[in-house]
Length: 241
Image 1: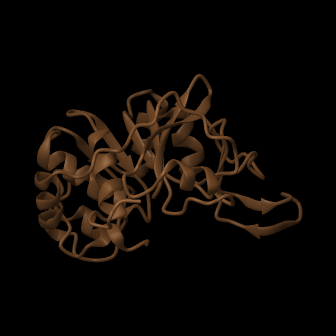
Image 2: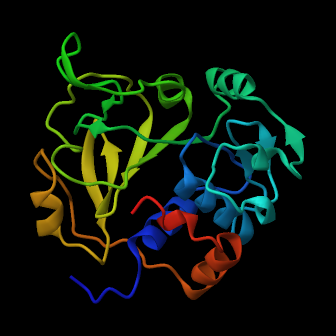
């Protein structure tokens, strides 16, 4: 474990931002501050032509207005360049033209199944959750589904999800400990964050960890950290921790 000089939220956001190519059409859902800020970071640094799509429909909103705890509020309509409502996002994805969707879930397994519906038996669940909502449509239809979760434990990363809410084009899952990547239909360890270790990942994952080599997630650069301070002065990227 390295000295806690870098925050996990910054490592995760920068990792997300680096996965956004210039010119790509990118969507994030509700309660999605980390991917929203990652998208703004990418647009500020290496992907100025990326298109920011969201639930309210404000395309490429001005980040200066993002001063409240929201990633799906009316602020995203203010000073936007266009209006592109959610139904059009679904249509875009169904036509194979949504490049990246940042989404999440409650449980994940090594085969890329996502559960956002129930914990326990579906007919008599221990906990009933909100369900798939847009994720059930967008994960299978977006070109790339990049998932994230701010918890990494054996209740989240399980051998088999209690219920398959959705599955599809899951490319990566970014967690506070590491980044998983889907390869040949199974989840493998791509990188470990320098703030964690292989042992910690193994201890907190409910399925055997597979990897070809040990690699570490690049730490945020000075340029990225400086841009994050401008883009997210309210530190919303850290609000889920």
